[in-house]
Amino acid sequence: MTDQKLTATPGQTVGPFYGYAMPWPGDNELVPPAKDGAVQLHGYVYDGAGAPVPDAILEIWQPDGNGDVSRNSGSLRRDGFTFTGFGRNAVDPEGRFVFSTLNPGPTEAGKAPFISVVVFARGLLNRLFTRIYLPEDTAALTADPLLSSLDEADRNRLIATREADGSLRFDIRLQGEDETPFLRFPSHED
Image (cartoon, rainbow, N blue to C red; front, top):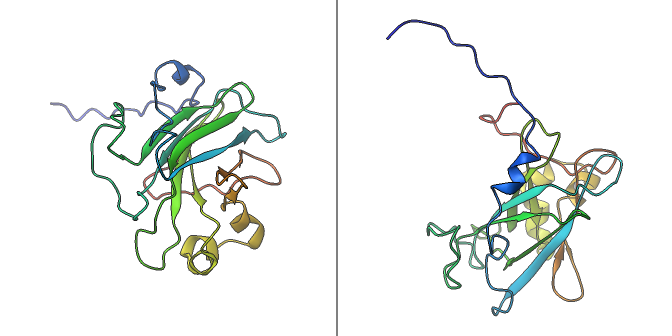
């Protein structure tokens, strides 16, 4: 072994090459769409000019309806019974994504339930992290540490809209005036 100092490989943009290897059949169905309690989470991914991003991939992680974070394996092989809390969806050419999932429960009493989201898209130097909060528990939303640290406009951009059919609508804007608030973690540097 030598004391040779190695130079780090420079960063590269995220895609669009990943789109051929990352999706798998049923990747966006955390639960079967006809399952009792299933909810559709859907929306669009837009760039800074407001145009749809046709080749983004989203990943979501979430607890089940009771707020339990799954420790079950099998995210890549759906069996129709085991809720793993993980899903992935490549957007369509109009930038639309759709997941069949459950409404997440709070992981602790009084906490606001949310879905963690990771966005991969062309031109990004690294993946982006955000959250989707459910709109119903306004007291928990008001008390949430992340939401309470944001101004009202940014806070509202992290809360999904419950549509008349019970589905959740959440659009992601990568840049611009209505940019979705993205999270930065200490171990995740640009």
